[in-house]
Amino acid sequence: MKVLTVCPYCGTGCGLNVLVENNRIVGVEADSSHPVSGGELCIKGYFGYKHLEDSRRLTTPLIKKNGKFVPTSWDEALGFIAQRLTDIKQQSGPDAFALFASARATNEENYVAQKFARAVIGTNNIDHCARL
Ligand code: SF4
Image (tube, rainbow, N blue to C red; front, side):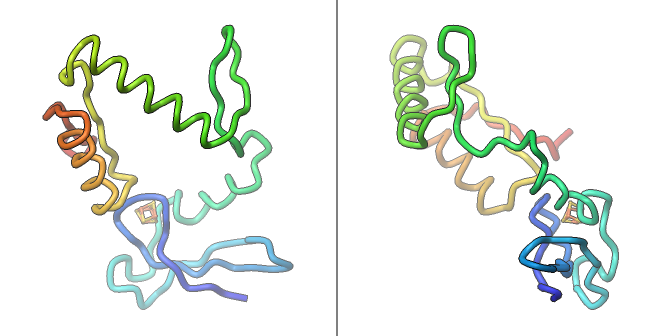
């Protein structure tokens, strides 16, 4: 079965067909009629799907405790991050933070990231790898 979709690997948005057999992704083909990519994909588009079944893939959040990463729940991980951000902001001020966004994220995700930095953290220390 072929499933037409957009490559999730970066914000370019190339069109591809995911080849599925027995409920597993077994390959990728470029969508020749896609208006962005016109039948071309980069190496990440063609082969990035192989990370899905990599045994080293993280499947749960980790928190470092006593020098070792320990699996934890999303609730505990997000609560821990929120508390650390709050503590650092109180101790050192909002400009102790800098946010670096990524071209691998969509425009919408990058918008949310900069909004979080400005409106929640209170800093304008924001940059993006595409500016280099
Ligand atoms: S990772 Fe490559 S194939 Fe995928 S959207 Fe970006 S440029 Fe296109």
